[in-house]
Image (cartoon, rainbow over all chains, first blue to last red; front, side, top):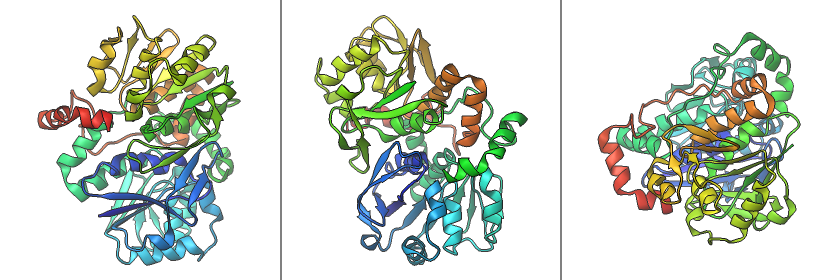
Length: 212
Length: 212
């Protein structure tokens, strides 16, 4: 079983590394970081370099493909190399997944048309403009498509994916190995629970939050 | 304000990238990834490359220093370059922090003697052998030392640190920007809540889980 996590310039690092930390622990799975060119890509902030180990050409039939979000996703050319590759590998994948605004990339590649999906709460309109029905849940499964809400939600989704790939015992062992017993010091992690002022401030800055 | 996150070979990637994703959003903070040598280090699994941008010599007085865990931490020489640097920067840091078995590194550097600290639940004995009192909480503050439980707990701790650095409004905005509203699909993330068999299986494999 091969799990391919896509990297591209200006990715949101946790979107990729959260699911990586869960899925690398699935027994008998080979996890690879794949991108257009081998070598370093920088995260959306420019502050962290992550390494692409395999080019798109070298990964032709992953069982699982996962697309993280990030401001760089908005700059990918329509019908460019990544979109073309996604359409190709989706034909044989068992699971096609995204985290955060990674759903916009899957949608731009034409893979979510008419489907239900999650994304970052600031990107809902852009997802729906692609003909996708947004579902305000932590992660959403529609057929073989698994999509999560923003950034940290990829961890929850990856545990659900680990269960699908290897059963609940494996998923629980991974959860305990990574001590994923979250206790955020505040209850401000969703637009439903965050103080109104916090939500409004972020909404007012949404172009910057999403695209830079 | 400068925040330095330490990278070393065979680090647990989420230990570093979880806190990075939170702390890079603290206003007026410069976040840097620092290590013995510039360039790529590979994660504990070997599957992910992360880039060290600054050498230890180049970062001499960070306000915040954060040490992630990882199997490579067990192989750092006692009194070697990283321990020496940690002792030096700790003299002027406002916060000295660790995630997971990063607490063992701080302890080996002599910085947690007689203090209360958190670490990965499989590493408690090793922490206490260094004269540190283990506290089974998500994260623990003792003076300027902030330490978290395993892997994913660094996200919770980083939000608390963001509050210390920039107030509760900032921390809540960061939590909402990263949609940190966790809903794990299982309740198996701590040794208290995990099924007994899951806990026992991991305990039996603890040498492998911690050191490889």
